[in-house]
Length: 462
Image 1 (cartoon, rainbow, N blue to C red):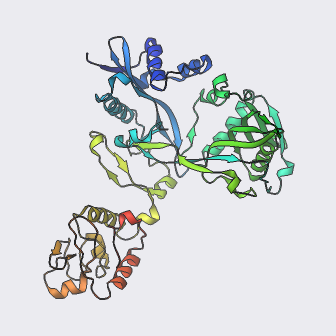
Image 2: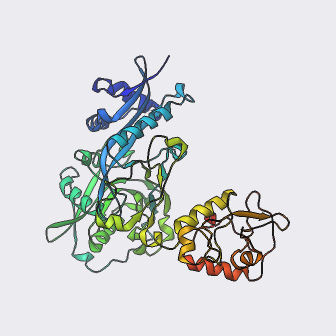
């Protein structure tokens, strides 16, 4: 039976969502969560694969905005609900849905597609890559002390109802999101997902609690958490499970952490999804007892780099891009992009050198770093400043197993060519010319670039 790929209809949401739940283990969602996801679903941005009346594949995308370097918030497609029934694997259904989805994202005018991957190995072939990282903490609060900054004692921390505090929390979150690239800007109704509190979410812990940090009546921070009580023969050993924390200044930030560390009948604190530059690590007395772990968080796929991406003077100054195409993204422009700061991008010969070094690693070009080619013309045109050639020719000396530029005369070869031993397929072990290390270091300093080991063609030293 053939499968039909079509946009989700409102009347088909129940079987569509049931297929998604079955793919993620079969556990049924709580009625509150199910009602919220039904309300948040944008039917024209979700697709399904159907065989008759049965749904065998799902994929969707929420519309929101993502903060990028420079402070701008660009439209992004939040990819979600990607699944294929276990009975229909190895048929190319996932690739069909992802191709259709990327075409739709481009037609919507959204330059980014982002997701949090349940299995990162799945999405790499569709052009997604890890763009942000998150840190999780498991703090022994019984042994770790905090060093508070000035002004922390002037901050008032008070309990409040999580739902009633939503407007104040969202105001703080919005101001923080504009300052940290990679943070999604919440759309209307999405704030409800931050306070949803079901028995499944609690997992034996208390209902969701919320505290606000205030100074002179102004809300400067918030924290939402649960307390998981536990006892042993020595006494209480409860755990504070932090859900979210945000603050606008250092004093409010420290006051919130001090409150969480001092909750009665607890001796541990768990926090996930924290930024890797968490300031808490500079306030604690013992970093090792925080047991920090860093892992991938947000995966990004650049779909269309156009006017909407390069908006704002700061954003244009901050970045430049180098596009390439991948076989899995036929028909989609800007399949990938390499980010670097503009200052690094303008350094002499950077893009050409990176491309040549990558080619050298694949064994198709000679190493592109030459001591004799330091003139502007040679860096601009890729040729030698002495002999005036506009491109390099590959020449391998089989007898000595070395690579050098193919100049016509021996004097030009001696003056411009610097043979480099390359551990790549087809490159043999060759001898080194006198003074080659000094000239190689001079060439590297001329272009002023420090490349990782994988981009250096695996240059080996004796």
